[in-house]
Image (tube, rainbow, N blue to C red; front, side):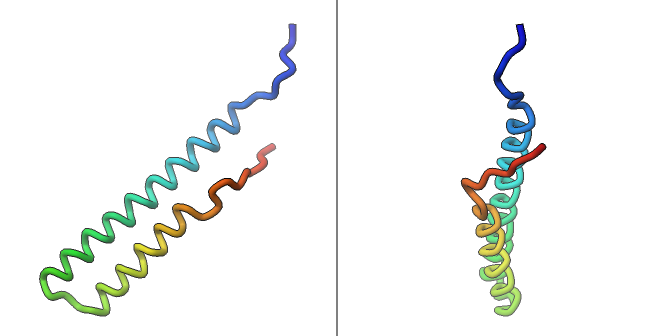
Length: 74
């Protein structure tokens, strides 16, 4: 007897990939913050510290961009 439910595997794979990418982006933001703190504590360049701050904000925003969006795959 055939099942009338759609195959959810593509959706599950997409969900897993999206979670993995968001996790990676958040991890990169934390790593960027670590290096910012290293520069700050060692008297590093203010311009470089500001660049790391900007990059960490970008990574955090990217990690949360599109939350709740559903990508239709065929």
